Image (cartoon, rainbow, N blue to C red; front, top):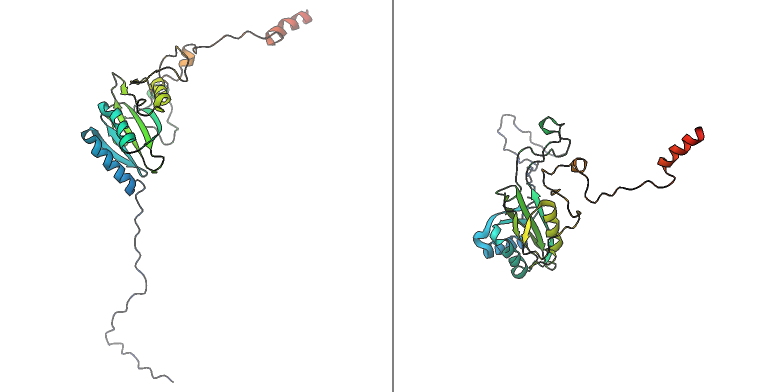
Length: 243
């Protein structure tokens, strides 16, 4: 038998260490954080452009930079010739004005998801007006890239062309000119890419009237005559048989 000495209930007991592990609250990583390669890329770009950089931001691990209007082409030159970003992904425009409700303020409720804003809001790095042009360039060998933005003056609507630096910007700028009305200074030949000659307006502006095809004839619309033996000929034939 084992000799067990009973514990005196009145004797103070030493505290026992808890065997339950303390739960450590895990902090989710920032999905927008830049990795070392992109942080270095952004730092080099800011060093080259200096005061021409108006603001910087990040989204899903990618740097975003807003630059001055008069330095837009120089920003492209820095990207291609200094940073080695040899691939132009796209050039596009944006209109930050809220889309007007169909039918005015008394129109139906917004069924889009997410619900569209009713006041002007700007994206990452902000804007000083309604319009912006943005572009994305990348390295085909370094797995890094950067998105650049530039504000567009609402009266002049002028933007420096990137075609002298990235020839592939040609069609992108033609499309942006066509859809928004931005004029790219230095572009070799701004002409329609999708829309017919004589088309009025710029379809991607938020205030473009979506019912314009009803208000005025579609440019290039051709009247088509009925084919022989069609429905138009069937009615007179049926009338003759009835008589």
